[in-house]
Image 1 (tube, rainbow, N blue to C red):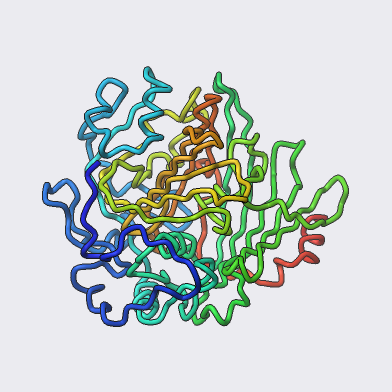
Image 2 (image 1 turned 90 degrees about the vertical axis):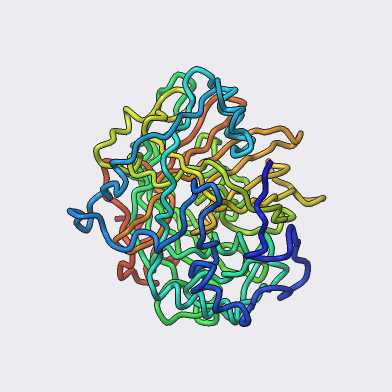
Length: 453
C-alpha cells in the first residue's frame, strides 16, 4: 500500500482528539488556500505520473443545454474507458482498491467489474462557501471531544484538517444548499434481483448553510430532515422528522415519526446509530445515510493516511433520466456499465467501536474525497472483525449550484449477497437546492398537520 506524504496538509498522522478544542484554527496558513492548496484544503497539484491532474477550479458553469430542473447532462460524456478491473486482474491494482472492492471481485467474479475513466477533478462550490471556509480556517476549533465545532459559519469548518474528527466534520458539514427537495428512492433486491421500489420524498433545510448564519445562530441545529414514504401502498404516508444537531454531545439528535394508521406523532429515539433505516430490509443503518451521519461517540477515530485509489466519481450516467432503474438493477450488484470510477486521492479514516459501547459494526473504514470531503467508500466489519458490508457513494457535481454530493449510494451485504441502492431519482424530480423552506414546517406540531393531509 503506497501512502502519499501529507506534508502539504499536516505533519500529524492518525492524531486522535481527546478533550475539547485541541485543534483547528490555522491563521498562519491561510495564504496556502490560494497557492498550493485548493479553497477547501486539497492539494492543487496532480501526481507525478500525470494520472491525477491538477485542480483548476472544478466545474464552474452548467453544461451547454442544461435547464434548471433537468437531470444533469454528463460534462464528460465523450470520455472513453481507459481500462477495466475485474476478477481476473484486480490483484494488479489491489494497492489502489479497498478491502470491500476486492471482496466484490471475489464474491461476484463473473459479473462485477470497474470501468476506469480519466480522472476529472470536477468538485467545486460557490465562491461564498470558499470565502467562509477561508474565514473558518482562521477561527474554527473542535469542541466537545470532537463532537462539535466553534467559531465557524457556512463553509467547511477545517480546511487544514489535522485529525479524523476534523475530516468527518468536514464531510457532515459539507455544503448541501440551504434548502432542497429530492426523491431518495431505494430498492433492496433479493439475491435473484427482484425488488419493489420505495419512493421517498425528502426535504432538507440546512440552517448552517443559510447565508449570514454562524454556529451561534443555529441553536445547535445543523439541519432539518423531513421524509415521507409515497409508495408502495403498505408504507405510504409514513413520515419521519429529524432535528439533526451539530453538537450531539450537548443535545442528541431528535426525531419523530407519523404513522398514518394510528394518525399520531410519536418520538423516535431509535432513529440513530445502527438501527435500521426506513424500509431498508435491514440492509442499511440510520448512520449509513449520506455514507455517515450522526454522533461519533461510539467509536474511536483515527486518520491513517492519504492515498490514491479508484473510487466512484462523476457518476452522471447513474444519475441520468435516460437510465432506467429496471435496467440498472441486477442480482448481487448494480449493472457495472452505468458506473464510473476514477483515480483520486482520498483520506482514510478508521473508526473502531469503543469498549463498553454497542454497534453492529466493530470497525469501519471511510475513504473521503480530498476535493470535497465526501465519503466515497466504506468498508464495514462485523462483531467478529470480518468484512460484512461495503458501501459506495456515486457522486456528481450539481453544477447549477455548484456543489459535489452523492447521487446514488449502494450498500452491499457481502455475506447475504444482497444490496440496497438509495437515491434512484432517474424518473423523478431531480434534487433542488437553496429553496425558501420555512423552519415552522419542521416541528412535531407541523408534522401532525402535514401527515394528516
